Length: 170
Image (cartoon, rainbow, N blue to C red):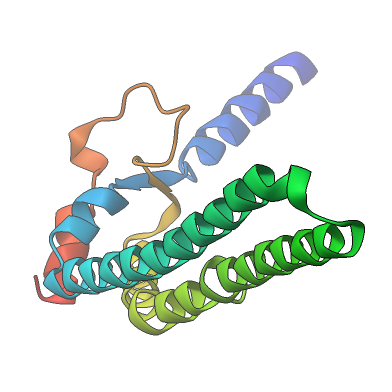
């Protein structure tokens, strides 16, 4: 009798536990972002700025390379103090280039600031929309298929990317 009650209790527990199954959804962030015109224009704007800044840095690097080649060519004719002076000029120019790189591309550089200004608001609105949909539809987890390298297969029926785009008005 105890055994029958135990088995019935176990079955009841398992059937109740299955009714609380977790719901999952997928999104494809690359797919979503490619269909948002403001993201595309912001991305092009950032690429243009980045290219402009990179060409400025490249010009400075070419200048340092020319200084170094001239130094190498003149090395046999230079006195000790002139040699040290030219070496210090080259090192100072290299340090200035590194500072310029940090100013444009560093962790708190101009490119990061532009990304915060142009792209982060778009990403935040996508995140908030996904969060709203997940809460409304009871999803325990939403996985980005574009960045989830361990997802081998997922049913297209659980992809909510188009729903996210529709909520965003695209």
